[in-house]
Image (cartoon, rainbow, N blue to C red; front, side):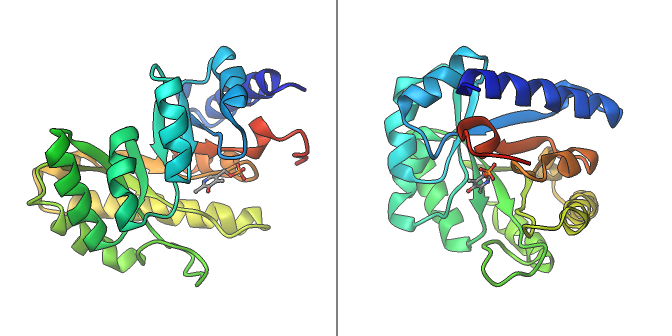
Length: 230
Ligand SMILES: *Cc1c(COP(=O)(O)O)cnc(C)c1O
């Protein structure tokens, strides 16, 4: 199948899985993670209807976002302080924030650009050492650290599940949803009402994520690779 066909097939299946879970497909944003393809690959997905793309490297989002300005571009990768300027210049949403010093830097750069930068807090739900993210018990402190930041708006949480076991993946997603529910109550701030997004689920486990309430799924290989077999 071509990238266009794969995108359409994934998008239709996302809608179908939403309906089978009793969810409105309009509640779930499909982020086409285009990190393995160039602008031509992006163009094929765009033609098939993709309007939100995800990149994990600053150089990639810098190159592609200006070529497809009608699309929204999300940054989903590891953040380095010195690249925050480039990320803020091109990303409508940053999924992967978990260090206080990065929050401060995003605030300063966004203020310079007169932008309010939407972000998600990346949470290491599973506790795997190889994974980025703040442990669940550290999220409330990070949220409090954003209260004084006028140019940073936390829209929700993001996680990556351990690979290879869909039951464990689903438990991880459920834990993220439960954490978000408790934080909306525990965070005594008017901004707690904005914590509505749950970015969870990738090519192998997005169905489990939608069943547990994902509002954003990040799908790469199932759209852009001709090698992806479930
Ligand atoms: C690459 C990547 C994805 C997409 O993964 P696939 O398995 O290719 O769907 C999602 N989220 C993050 C953070 C990624 O780096």
